[in-house]
Length: 155
Image 1 (cartoon, one colour):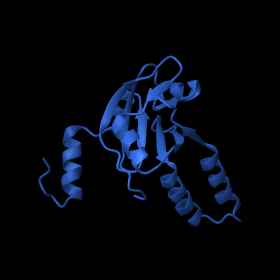
Image 2: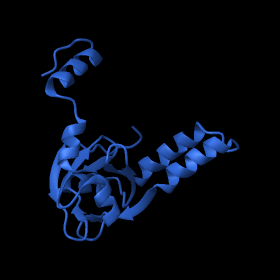
Image 3: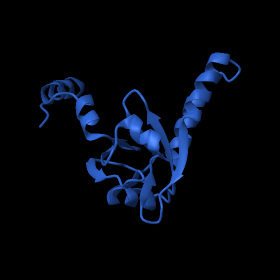
Image 4: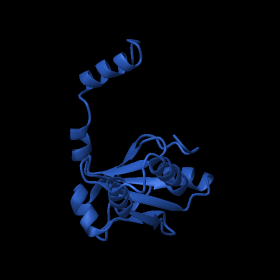
């Protein structure tokens, strides 16, 4: 969308007892290549996942969002305040791990098993069962892909 990063695939990892997760090597390489050291994390309470954005991607999203708001309008200002107050800036440690606070692990249902999912310009961290429940069935997915791609057969 906004960046040269391209996070792909899904990778299962284990959280330690402090909530630390190793960022998959292929994601770390993307961040290193773009000289991205800071990540912006947002807990999506509806989907029950954590979304991680490289700082450059976040800055572009923030700029685009603010351009659609009238900061003199009380509702717009409240919307922006709530949006921005729900994010945290974090750094990977020297071992390539990120730390999810206990309350975040509880919100998204992570005890030990977690799944990183690449979503192009950002990645998400899920409880694997929650992710599986949020996806289309193979049949629905195939049908929707064919509709979006002009009834082209998708393999």
